[in-house]
Amino acid sequence: MRIAFRLLIAVLPLALSFLFGYLLTGPLSFGGGEKDILLAIPALAWSVLYLACFLFFWARRRPLLWSFGIAASVATVLLLVAFLALFLVSVVA
Image (cartoon, rainbow, N blue to C red):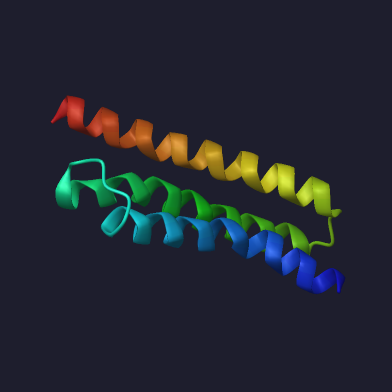
């Protein structure tokens, strides 16, 4: 039961980002057409980073809340670094 609960916590953000992408292509529309799906890409990237970090900390046998908090923090920092790098490349080029 504990393994299933940890897997649910690890995979839930990824499932929600796919659901968000589906909603953007169908029932939920912000009037941008195909550009709406660009809103789901950062959520998908964050959830993949979170999943990788969470599984890494789970393999190292860290407590659940610690794994959850640190994985979310690391995923957020890595995504912000990626956005900053892309921004700097776009300004320089």
